[in-house]
Image (cartoon, rainbow, N blue to C red; front, side, top):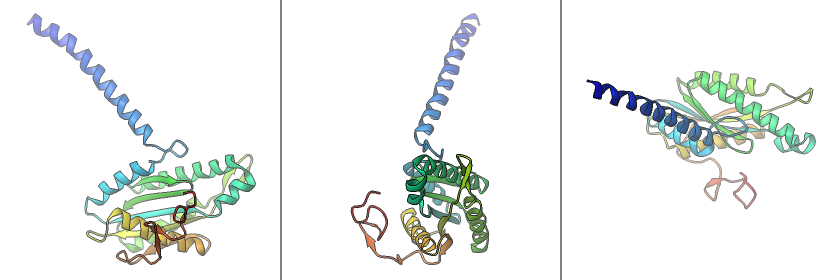
Length: 214
């Protein structure tokens, strides 16, 4: 009995130490997968989680978001102001996605994405209306507000209607159409055929399709 108690007294601190170490490692790994400016998932981490979400075979809405005239903010107010807008937009999106039991990520630059459970087109319309209203609130910076306008595209997923790449592509097309109209949101009604020309596997006109910086 005494040998058993001695063994346990040695093993328990070791097990506890490994548990703490494993938790620390998981937190380090998660931190590496987070965008340092917004706290959202990075592109790779977001896409991995988005694919798992779609694999559940439930209805989902895939969103792509972009800030209107973001370059103008950077050029006129400076990169610190641009960072403030990116940070606040990402945090607003993250809170909204969490409230809707979804996930959100920063794809790069001023482009974001999210996946939320889908409960019908009418519900999605109401959700997008509320999202854009929240994202378009002015961002405070250096004692004054920065006007923000967001464009959101959405693709509605039902079982067998497409993979993540297709859904992101179609949502991106709708985002671009919304941007051309000054912002707001649009929903893709067809998923099988892209509505816009493709260059290098991406929507024509997106950064990176013709040698521009992504």
